[in-house]
Image 1: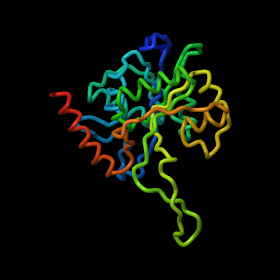
Image 2: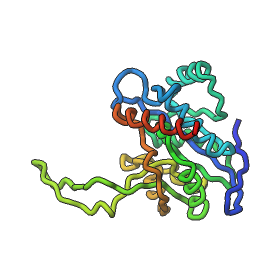
Image 3: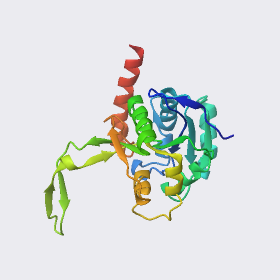
Length: 246
């Protein structure tokens, strides 16, 4: 069943909001047989933690979960095991993230006033402020993404034998999700043919000729990709639970 609840924002505008949660990774860098989105964070799979977080931030937002077809049965079993009840639509993943987002977009109604975000299923610690800011700025400008400053020094590889040169880190940013767009902009962008340079949704939209504005992300909004990321996430989870209980 398609459709989303009409939502009001602080500035008084009204629109429908969708959030496509992409969880198609094989988790190869994590090691083991279980995909990273199904590994436990606290007492439940990380993907469920992400979805519950997003639903708590805005219950009016229609969530669309994109999973590989061969993960559907596992997901259903996990939902029963953990009594997972967040309402969502389910879409089949594609060969790449690009094609997975296309499949998620197919679940969105053809309406004029709508915003669509795309979020990584293994980013469970996005803040409510980041989500709100992205949707607000996308409504105003058409496309908005969260970014954070680079803290480490950066160098550019200029040749073989390990030759590098320093670059100005204040001219670079790390990109996060959710990345949010007006529906018409995102649909048009995803009508393009896939190319390898499409690393995220912003790169797809920019290739269609639309400029993307940025908002300040939150540093805790890490993407869980390696075993070290999960070590950090467990600490963040403990702090999060302690704050809720305080």
